[in-house]
Amino acid sequence: MLFDTPDLLRYIAANYSGAEKIVEIGMGPEDSVYKALKREMDAEILAVDICPSGDALFDDIFEPDIEKYSGASLIYSIRPNPELILPLQKIAQTVGADLLIRPLTTDSGHKPPSMKLMNYGRAVLWVEKHH
Image (cartoon, rainbow, N blue to C red; front, side, top):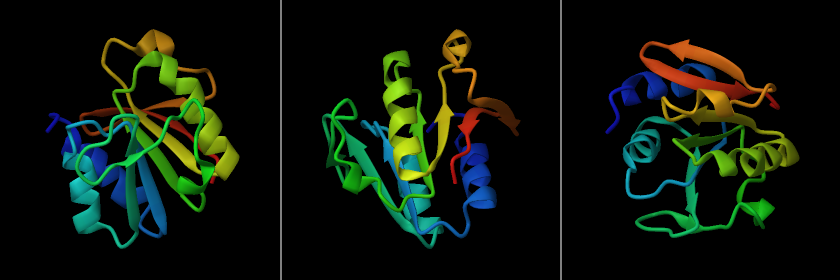
């Protein structure tokens, strides 16, 4: 678990309590946020990854299966590689979901101008509203 996971969870709970669906893209082996959301949120929580493990479903965000994201209020990704940011934005925009990125601390130069930088407790977040 990352040091700011509790703050990230609080942000999602405070802003998406009425969401019907939330999707994590690029879950990888660190699934603490996904599992906490499954426990605490009254919403469909999905996870996708190019190399899925656990509960994650397969998807390649460069050629996404948009149906997996349809109906989502929030799409989020934790520490995505910079080359994934544009496909993340395209998916969120296509389905009308907000996009939340918890970047690596060294990725500040990769923040797209359309994303708002937010500090929520100890969590540094990039947010783009579509919903």
